[in-house]
Each structure stands twice: as structure tokens, then as C-alpha cells.
Image (cartoon, rainbow, N blue to C red; front, side, top):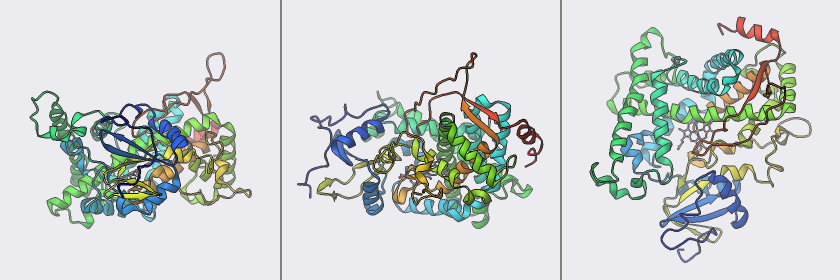
Length: 483
Ligand code: HEM
């Protein structure tokens, strides 16, 4: 099979391969262009390491789903275990430990388990509405607090401090470091793994210090909420959380190994949930400010089904197809994990006559898939109607590509989807969202820009978020304070 050619792609140079072709900024855009030039599977190499870019949903299904046995590994980065981040399900090798962790995670985040978290999600979403009422210009910060508060309340069952929460600080710092390490070229030891055996004083081996610091920070991050909840469970704190269920089911004084697993699984939830949910909801605010028609249509539907001045609940979901289409379009229009999380192959493979070697890093280019003109005509337009039939009912396109593929598909997707839906309909039921205006009353244009990184956030922009009526504002302040 190795006589077969690699899939097409930019021509590699001697030794360096495509080192200089791999873009450091918004690589998913360049990879989409490569897709137009070379096809749905594109091959590149850097220092002899193979990279396969998957540019269509069909190929993603063929490889990452139908051949999941071969395509479910993650690339190895030596810095991850050195820092102590190897408890992270997201980057864990596709082996027995991953299976155990994923099973545990799935038990508490599968679709039929999520309804249990609806009350907590709505309580935090209502906090967001009050925050938007008092300081609407800080909508990004409020969204961030919402995402953090929901996942902490779901997993540990306690309410984070609005500012300066120790766990949130530790988790954010830990995630920042994980993202830094995952950037290609950030730490030489990732490309030259033998460096890990060199002492810290050796030139270029300062990564040992960074890794040690991170490891201490992560230990504290795992222990702070765990110890807090365990000590306070008798007083009812954290009683309904994922953690308390894990502890109940598995004996509070269970084996050390069991306890470690529970700490690991719960800590990963925050890492995977907070940033992704925030970015998705900020995309929603951007899309609404740019599309007043969509705001109006969604509000009409909410007013008809729920009633003006009343807040939606999950029981209204199936009766609001237009709002559902808005949610699907938010995930499609600007996918915030545009290259998913890289997969890797564990065996040599052949696809459509091309050779894909064992150990290839596979990048699912979600950006290219959701901008595929044959599936989504005029893909840059934010158009929920693309998910509706002529009769206004939802069509069958309910596969949210933004959650990834195969065995590695986002295990928190049902929780994320519920938070995103609940936030979108609650905000639209109470607020108008439009472009902000300057002192002269002229609309401030929104520049659609996105950051680099595994999770790509909208660049700062302004929008006007105003209560739909003074009654709604009053109700928000009065009626909802004890919801
Ligand atoms: C809007 C929010 C979210 C988006 C867009 C998102 C997206 C993704 C993507 C693209 C992947 C990689 C899939 C692949 O490798 O093919 C992933 C993995 C993962 N996500 Fe999410 N996610 C979100 C929210 C969440 C939440 C709320 C949780 C936890 C409660 C979560 C937990 C995870 C975990 C643990 C993995 C790793 C799965 C594995 O490697 O086996 N995510 N997510």
C-alpha cells in the first residue's frame, strides 16, 4: 500500500516538508482554499510528520465515523503528561482509560440525563438576564460568567463567586496553559520528544519548570471543589450535582483510584465546557446584531408560543421550530472549534486510492464543511431558514458538525445544546439586540473577526442590548429574583 500516492496537497520541501505553508493565522481558511485546489482530502507534512486535512462532511463520515477504529487516536504531545494534563479526556490516547472516563462522563451527560440540569441552567440564565439589564455593554463578561456558573453548578453543585472565584481562576489558568502548549511550535519538546530526558538547567529545557508549576496548579484545581463539596454534602451543598451522584454511587470512601477518576472527570468538564459555550453565545449576539429580521421572527414565535413577558422553558422547545433553526445556524455560521480537536491514525490506511500512514494527524476542517456551497448555499449569510421546510417545520439536517466526529464526538454536546438553546430563547424573549449607535446616532458597523486558537472567539464588537419593554425590565427585576 505504501506504493500508493499520498492524497494531493502543497508540494513539500526537502526535510522541512510544508513547514512554511502551514499558516499560523486562521489556518482553517487556508485549508478551505487548499480544499478547493486539491480536493476534500489534503495531505501535508512537517518534518516527516503527516497531516491529513478533511474538508467535507462526507469524508469525515467515511473516515472518522465508518473507520473509527483507526481514526480515533489523538496526536501525542509530550508536554501534556509533563504538565499533568493527561487526565484530560479530550487529549487522552484512545485506550482503556479513555473508554472508562468517557463511559463515566457519558452516564451523566447523555441526552436523557440532561433534563435533570434544566432547572440549574435556567436559574443561571435568569441571572444572565438580570446582568444584561444592569450592564448590557459587558455582555461578553456576563456570558463568560454564565458558562462557568452553569458547568460548576451542574458538576459540583455550588454557585461560583461572581468575581475572584478560586476554582474558576485555577481552571482558566490551567486551560490557558493547555492551549499554549497545543500551539504548534510552542515548546520544542513537543517536536523533539527526547528533550524530556534532559535536565531543566540544560539550554532550551526550561519547559520542566513550566510543567511543574502547571502540575501543582492542576492538582489544586481538582482538589478545591472536590474537597469543598465532599465536606459540605451533609448540609445539602452539591446534593444534585454530577459529583455527588458519582460519590453516592461509588461510596464516598471508595478506592484512591476511583476517587482520582472522579476528580479527573469532573475537572475536565469545566475545561471543555466554559470557553466553548461562551464563544458560541457571543457568536449568537453577533449574529443577532447583524440580522434584525431574525430577531423579529424569533421573537414573534416566542411571543406566540410562550407569551410576551413570559419566560420560555424547555417544555416550549418542540413548538418553536424557527428558534431551533436559529440555534442550528449559530452553530453552523461560525463554528468556534473550526478544526475540531485533531484526531490521529493508529494504522496505515487507503482512501480512494491514496495512502494514509499510521500516525497521521487528522484535522477535521469543520469550517470548510459548514461553508460547503453544495450543502449550504451562500454560506456566509446567517440564514436560519436553511434548516426549515417550506411549511416552516424543521428539515432533517439536525447533525451539528461543530461537535466533531465519531468516537471522539463532543461528549458534552447535549448539555451544551441545552445551555445554548435556553440562553438564546430567554435573551430573545426579553431583549432586543441591534447594532450599537455612536453619539451622533449612527450605527457602529460590526467587523466580523475571529481569534486564533483551538477555540476561536469573536473579536470584540459592540451591540445594543435593550429590554423589549419597560414592563419586561420591571418583571426581570421583581418577579425573577427568587427563580
Ligand atoms: C458549544 C459548546 C461546545 C462545542 C462547540 C464543543 C465542541 C467540541 C469538539 C469539536 C470536540 C472534539 C470532537 C472531535 O474530536 O471530533 C469536543 C470534544 C469534547 N467536548 Fe465539547 N464542545 C462544547 C461543549 C462541551 C461541554 C459543555 C462539555 C462538557 C460538559 C464538553 C466536553 C467535551 C469533551 C470531554 C470532549 C472530548 C471527547 C473525547 O476526546 O473523547 N464539550 N467538543
